[in-house]
Image 1 (spheres, rainbow, N blue to C red):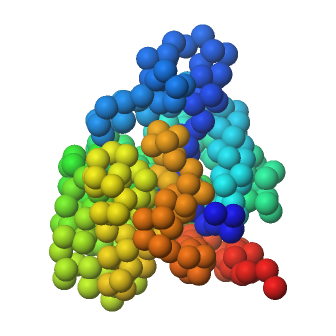
Image 2: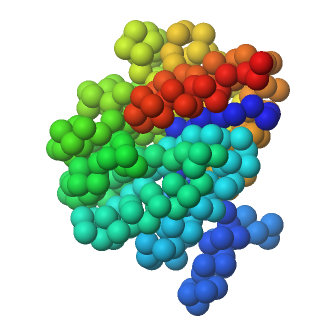
Length: 323
């Protein structure tokens, strides 16, 4: 589908084209051939396997210049899918090991690379702590986020294995980010059930990454609709990882029908053999959605974006149909 698109849930490393990672590994003499399948794409089995392959692929990204190159590669692919604005999850754990000064260099390199592609596509960074690395690592990530908050770094969130630890243990990190003026989001309601969505709401987030298992708790669905909490839904990712057997049984349409605000994103597109345009095409086929539905979804995403009002106005203007 060729209409302009807004994407709110994209992991920068998870969007790395396999060819980019293979090429970088060759440059550095690093052997990671085992993470690729016969077709050249990433190969893994299950969610735990996905995390291992993700971290192996990320291991070849070791400098600010590597991340600048990655940012360009990812944004060029996104723009090719019609994206005009994207928010990417960025982890200081991968970019300087949680050191504030080192992270500043990485953030500056990514911001410069992104700015070079504007206004065709605009990007904002959401600093993300990794849940399965624990609360102490999250504190370091939050300090990095707070110190770099500004025009490029506009949000803070948590990703990783949501089956590990309790979200309340990360409250300090979220409080730190909030005090720095950052917008908040959290992965929940994917591999953990509806209670994880409630735990995320208790942190004061405006958006939930995934959140689809809220559908299992009707009262929670009503609460999400009443609060106006936005779900960053990644249907292709959910199906690829086996959370739902096929797209027709994915709850995105039922959530919309109950008044929950949803958006459409790709999560880690090359890992899940998807693209932003392909997500739209598959949703249109599964649910019979027309262009008007997708324009409404993109407007919802633009209004929920972690950006300044001038940027939001530009995005919404570009989303309007041609006259």
